[in-house]
Amino acid sequence: MAVKSSMLVPLLLLGLVGPLACRRPEPKFPDDVGVAEARAKWCAMINKHRSDGTATVLAECEAFYPAASAPFLNKMVGCYDKLLNEYGDDAPDSVTLIDNCTQQVLGGADPGDVSDTPAVKARCERMLRCQQVPIAACNKSFAEVDGMSRAVLSNMYNLKAQAEVAACLNDTAC
Image 1 (spheres, helix red, strand yellow):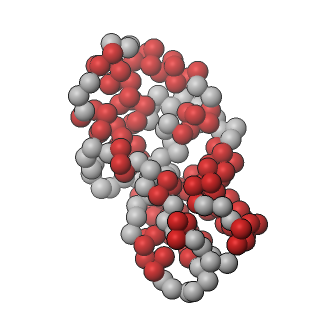
Image 2: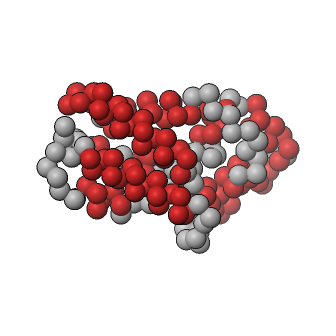
Image 3: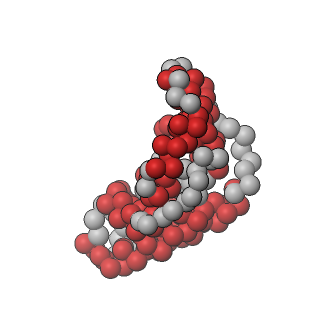
């Protein structure tokens, strides 16, 4: 089965946070190795579905640093591969597959207290600075959000991506 060109490097998964970032934080993060290993699995899976055997897709894929956390991306590899195998040549576009897998991977998720994640801390600090919403009230609102939404807003992303979002929130005017 040939992978459609729109499925080569699904940017929703591999580059979701990039456009949101205002500046790049320091390049070394504790989860870098795990994220790189998960990216390699993702790229190998995408390349496996190429019918022409070229390495172009693999090289393009490996050029991106994912915004996803390693655990999330590892689960996405299995789901995405399974769907591509099930659909065969009738597979929908990558956005549909990514959405389906994201819902499967995060459905029923409960990441617990996300108030200590960089993105949530920065969001609450910005809400205090710009809207005078106390940090405790902001954290309480996150605690009341369903588990899947808390995961989407926090630990679906790797530490570098969370730092980029936090930097953007911290550095932008109200």
